[in-house]
Image 1 (tube, rainbow, N blue to C red):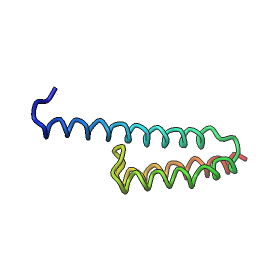
Image 2 (image 1 turned 60 degrees about the vertical axis):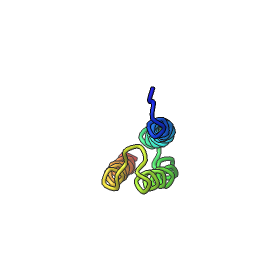
Image 3 (image 1 turned 45 degrees about the horizontal axis):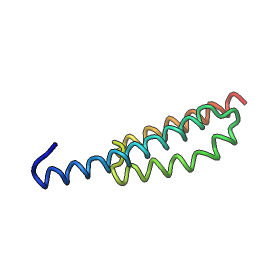
Length: 89
């Protein structure tokens, strides 16, 4: 355990940030799974704005290791999955 006050504060801040990051990452993964396992294009398209919003917010705040480029890559992959769903139907 840290002895300095500033180190103790840093530890508290890190624990709080880890909890938030874990929550954000989990929500994004759940949304991604919903889209990837969707049987119809309509189901996937309904979830898409929710996922894009979460990705944009995470990138803007630097949460869960999401940079603007990483969020853009996720969006591109999701768009590709949805277009493949449309092609199969």
